[in-house]
Structure formats: C-alpha cells, structure tokens
Length: 200
Length: 200
DNA sequence: CCGTGTATATTCACTAGGCAGTATACATCC
DNA sequence: GGATGTATACTGCCTAGTGAATATACACGG
Image (cartoon, rainbow over all chains, first blue to last red):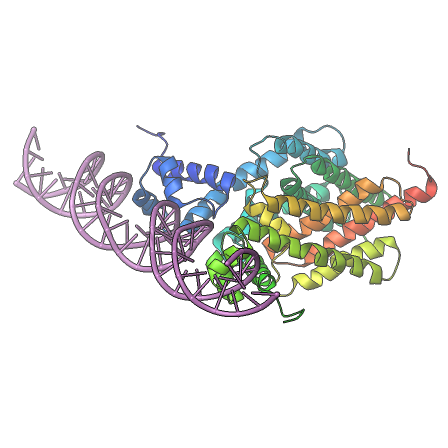
C-alpha cells in the first residue's frame, strides 16, 4: 500500500462515469453510484459535497482522455490536412458502432441540464469543447490557412452535429457524411490559401 | 362547447410542451404537468396511459410546426440557394438569443433517453429529422445539384451541431458560423453542378 | 513501549419529500 | 343505464442529503 491502491474517490468517479454515461445524469441515483463503487452513500458524500459536485468530477475525468484520443487519430492519419481532419470522424464512426456507445457525455449532460446554465458541469463541458476548437485552430494556423478560427469552429460544429445525430438515428453513417463535409471545407480553405497567401 | 373549447387533452399536451421543453423530460413530474394543465393527475392518466405516452405526444406536437418554420425561413429568404439555406441558420440564431430558448426538443429528448433506443420518443425524433433532411434533398434535387442526398445530410448535421453547441456555450454566434459553412458547401456543389451536369 | 490526541475515512440508520401509477367513486350526457 | 370524463385519496417505492457513531493511522509525551 505504499503508492497505488485505487483510492476510494477514484473508484467513485469511475462508477459515476460508467453509470452517468450509460444511463444519463438524472436517470442514475447517488445510491446507485455508491453501490457500484462498493461504498456506502455516506462515504460518497464524504468525498463529494453533492450530486452536482459528482457530476462535475465525472465530466472532468472525461476531458483529457477525449482530447488526447482526437489528437492521436489526427496525428496518426495518413494524407494531407483534409484527410487528417476526416480521420477523426471516421475513427469516431467506428467507435459509434459499438453497442455501448452513447454519444458525447458533455453534450448529453448539457442537454439534460439545459435549464441550469450556470451549472458547473456546463462550464466544464464548454471548456472542453473550446479546447478542442482551439487545438484545431492551431493546426490550421500552422498550415497557414486563412480564417483558421472560423474553420476550426465549423469542424467542431460538424463533429458535435455527428454526436447528436448519430445518437438519435443510431446510424454511424452520418458521421462519415460529416467527415466528408469537413474534408471539403478544409480543402477549400487550403486552395484559397495557396492562391492568396494573406487573408483579406 | 359545440366545437372549439380547448379540449382537456390539448391543454395537457400544451402544459407538457412548456414544461418538458423548459426543464427536460426527467426533470418534470407528471404531477407538475397535470397541475399546469389545471387537471388532476388522474385525469391526465385517463388521456395518456403513461408518462412515456405523454412524452411521445409532446414531440408529435412539435414536429409539424418546426418543419413549417424552417421551410418558411427558406422560402422567404432572398438570394440564391446557398443564401436560402444560410437563412435558416441566421433565423435560428435570432431565436436562440431569446433567453427561453433551450435548443432542439427532439435532440435533447434523445440525449435524455439515450439508454432506451426503442423508446417511442426516439422514433418520433428520428422521423422528424428525416423529414427535414428529405425536404432539403428535394430542394437540392430541384436545383439539379449532384449528390443532393449527401449534401442535405451535411446541412442537417450542421444544423443539429448548432443546436447542441449553442445550447452548451450559450453563444448564438456558432449558429452563424454553421450557416456560413452550409452556404459554402451548397455553393461548391452548385459550381460543380454547372461544370459537370451529371454526377460521376 | 505505551497511552493519548487528532485528522481521515467509513458505516448504519434515518429524514423528509418526490415519484409514477392506481382504486374507487362521482358526475354528466346521450 | 352505459360511456365519457373528472376528482379525492392513496400505495409503494425512490430520492438527495444528514446525524451520530465508529474504525484506522499516525504524532507526540512519558
């Protein structure tokens, strides 16, 4: 027990992650999370001051892993910038075909808590999406594309549209359609950049 | 009471629409809907056999009005096809700036019920989105664009991305960015169509 | 080496209220 | 008198959150 032995708090967050993602925030009781973590509810409330606090921890725990995954898909893809962007959508389509896939935890939480705009979970979700957008923007800047901020935003919109749409239709083909659109938008921006190196 | 006097059932659906859209499905009790409709819960259960049934009625009631609105925005917009498509996004951005705006009821419901893929509400939501996509496709077909089905789908993806993203960030500017992307995709398809009238 | 103190971590049992759905009865209209 | 619609009052269960006690571990004085 000198260093790593799965601290209770981590087990609780892991349980929350599994249950909240699978069944939704409001569909899962604090009791259920505690039970899955193998802890009494009172212990859970020792580590988290409220369910809202637990929801925030759940989303915090998804932030980095998600971003790292997207970047890895981008980096490992072959081809030019348009293909690398498209690769994110194609990899995501593959994930989405898994029966346990339930869309984007951030987006689904924001849909559930739409009537609480100031909720900590909303801030964490917004920050996560902003990070993704900012990362894309740096990639586009590096490639000397004009209007990188707008383009990054549009790609992010396509991605979030995929999440929402595929969740509704249960058809991952939508994700590939979004990937093609993203490819086209990036290609167009690239062509424009080579014709007129500086933006207007 | 010969013909039109707001039948009880309609008042219940109206109450459900208001509350479910504002606060989410799981955040609203059947008691709350009954109270707002000015009816006892027992009466509500006379007209709807379960809460799920009421949820379905809530979404059914939003289907046509939403579609009609989109079509009107499209029809009344000035300019060519790309501008007419973009107009949908711009009008939506205007709506989204209203403080009571809560995104797309269909998408939010599907996010809440993501763990119940066979739920009637999911089918109604999916059918609604399919209708929108199909309508766009006919518009693109009429304009003799090649690959109208794919393009319609991509516009729908941008639209749903807007709903989800603006709900999270509470920033309607995302909707306008999506509108620009939609404009560009349609413009590009149009140019391609005039160069090579038949798709490959 | 032993006792005592203190902070951390955990448990059992509980409150107070909300939830979906129902048993039963009463009214009203044809 | 049967069909339709509404109301009162209820069941049984689930919910977030808490009060009070307990276990564990490590620090320091003797």
